[in-house]
Image (tube, rainbow, N blue to C red):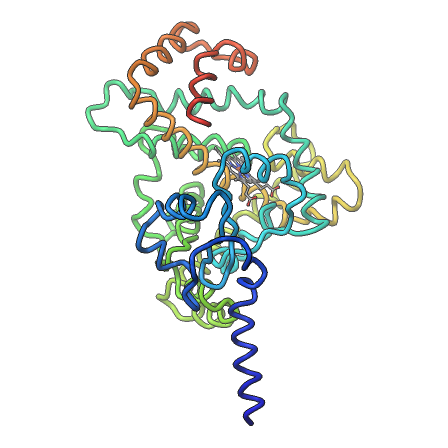
Length: 381
Ligand code: HEM
């Protein structure tokens, strides 16, 4: 009996402290059992990482509950890890919000081993500069649409909202070949909060966007997410059993997330299967390009890019590309606004390019805006 008890305790302790043991030699603050460093996050908010970097150096440990993370807090080392050595660091660990959401698990971020390399190699061909350059007119048209009547608007404009609309529209078009219409002056995001549970208004695009935004905003690591996500942070083995139970109880956050993710998944599957049936298409969106690459490549690529992985990867682009781009744009505008002399010179360079409706080519963007390039590199973007 005693041995069984000791065995159970040893099992629990090694389960909880296993990830810590692997990285114990990396500097970092002492951990609180079960919670790791979450209390520090609650105390200092987002500043926690710079405070810890000052105290422990450029490479330190941070524990989200039981999960150990190594934080790299130096731009040059980040480049090393994120660009130069990117291919040597496969198999990311699964954060608990993603573990609760099968929809997000089949994109590039969370696929593993050989599947990741195969998917990545196929996708990389779509990032050729010539293809990216062909997207400039798409960007231009959404920017024009979003900024139309901006000057005559009497209300204040929240730039981060505007940039999120533009970025989502550009990526929606580039990933799926669908115009979400968010950059139009009055659009579906005005009604996003209206009712996520009653989506029978028949407007497929606005439903899709509502579900996308709900699903994305539920991917939280800060103890305000669904119960199963919180459990996943603290005791990961309990996450899936609890999620299975809670998703069956109407009204719980797990139920809502599961319902929304299922609807979103069905809608994505529909888009993919419809596109697969279109035999002749000259569309240049990401989805069509994957389908074409899959046809022309080996059996391996066909086995890897099954419809569920295709829809997850296209959807991942929307997820990975919109908030990141919008945040970068907003930050640049904010930083520039804090330096009026830079702002003046930037505006002079941009206005000097030509009349308002003249569209720059990719070549123009690379060569005709030296001051803009310089400003971006100073702000480290
Ligand atoms: C300023 C904007 C962006 C920033 C700061 C950013 C940042 C990052 C970072 C740090 C990673 C690596 C994550 C990791 O290894 O765990 C990543 C991966 C990824 N990003 Fe971005 N990203 C941006 C824009 C975009 C855009 C526009 C797209 C697509 C349209 C995109 C799609 C992806 C994808 C698919 C991956 C996974 C790559 C892989 O696993 O091979 N990102 N991004």
